[in-house]
Length: 221
Image (cartoon, rainbow, N blue to C red; front, side, top):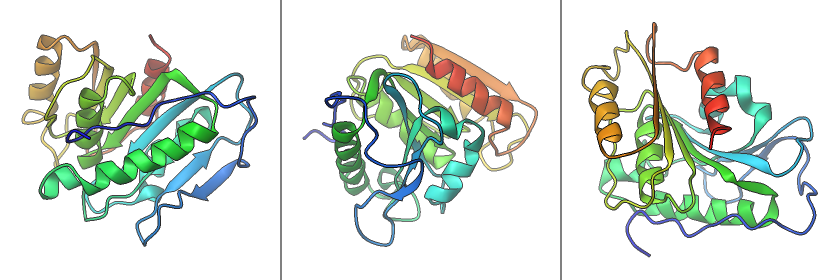
């Protein structure tokens, strides 16, 4: 496996039955930092969109879910947790967190009717940077990247051109917009990534309207 590579792929199971009821379920990866799977409350027609949602520094699955709670019933949401305080690329390089994410994705994609045209890597803050990097390295899997207040992108290889949604608050005091998204967005455009870039009046957060805009973006091809 190449550095940062994810091998999991959607493969529609026979039928469209949901293997778990609506609500929160443990991922079952083991350890104190396991993560969650959020199943929509109401049945959705056809194959499900899948959002891999990654938390920020010092965060966890529950807090990551809170960031996109307004759209939680519109997709199957996979919420892994980093083994350290943040994701592995920020603590020495791609490795253990990539392996755990791949294992979780393989399990979910084998069991659930996931739409291969709507598979998004999403995240907030450090998680946004990590999700964007994973999407850029794994365009054969991820069709979209949803990056809420990212700081950077650090792909070690490039695969495909997933559609990218970036949002950032103009008053963000944690990750300064001038040093982060206002530098990152032009680079993505220059590299040929289909990009929607949204600035909003606010801080280090994901306003409800931004989450809903991201969901609408996930439905674009």
